[in-house]
Structure formats: C-alpha cells, structure tokens
Amino acid sequence: MIIKDVGPDPQSFDLEKATLENTHYRAVAWSGKYLQLTLMSIPVGEDIGLEAHPETDQFLRLDAGRGRVQMGRTKDRLDFDREVEDGWAIFVPAGTWHNVTNIGDETLQLYAVYAPVHHASSKIHATAADAERDEDSGHDEPPSWSVQPAQQPSDEHA
Image (cartoon, rainbow, N blue to C red; front, side):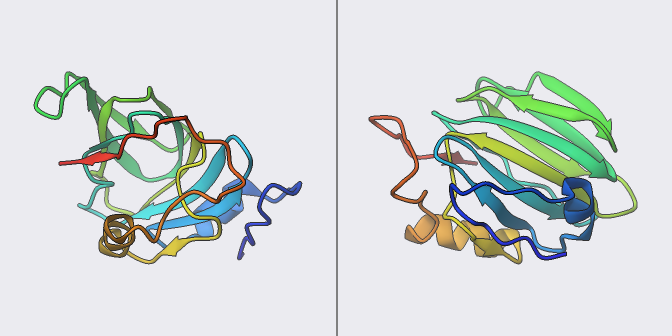
C-alpha cells in the first residue's frame, strides 16, 4: 500500500495496513497545516536515534514488534525507560530527549504524529542515514503552508 501525501487536503486510508506494509525508515503519509503523520520501520537491533524536538510534541503507536523507549530532560539522563510492543502508545513532550530501540526479533513498525508539522511533505527516507543527511542539508523542511512556531529552534541529535 502506497500512501500519497495530499498535503492539507482531506485524506483517509487504512493506517494499520499502511504502517505494517511500510518498509522505509520514515515515510511522510499526510501533512496538514498543524500536524503530520509519518510511518516508520525500524530493523531488529536498530533505533530511531536519540533526539529532541524543542517545539514539537509527538505521539507514536506501535503496530508490530517490540521496543524500548527511553526519554529524559537531558540526553545524559534518560530516566523514563519502558519496554513497549504492538498496540502501545508513546507520548513525547516537546523538548524531551527520546529514543526507541527495536529489541525484538522482527521489524518494529510504528507511526508518529508530529505537532506542528516537522518534515517535508511526501518525504521518504529509505534509511536512518538518508533521513539524517536530508535533515543536515536542509532538504527536510516543513512545507511553507504549515504553521510553525515563530522561532523554531533546531532539533538536537546525540
């Protein structure tokens, strides 16, 4: 199932099916004016990457696999540490350092909702390295029609 990001236009699709069929590290499935949906696929033993989004809240839901979520106020003190699996939700407050690691024996399939919009519309990253390269080079900026904070500080990556 391939989902076309139609921008801020109305959209409807089978989210669980799309999440389970996604093979990309991250694929932007829908970009609205105020929030965005991405699908993620994390291979066994890999992770999302320790990061913090100063102005972005996140909601993540696992549809397959088993993971470990770690969060904290600083990258050196991740005092929230939980195992999560299919059906679990993760809420990441803006500014919180966080990482999700695949600790199971199958691909970790999840989706993430960002508010405000965080990535370029329709952006697909096959791997985490592709995502990092685009972010570092400025090729993964939110669309101009999305509403962003007045001063958007850069994300932080460990």
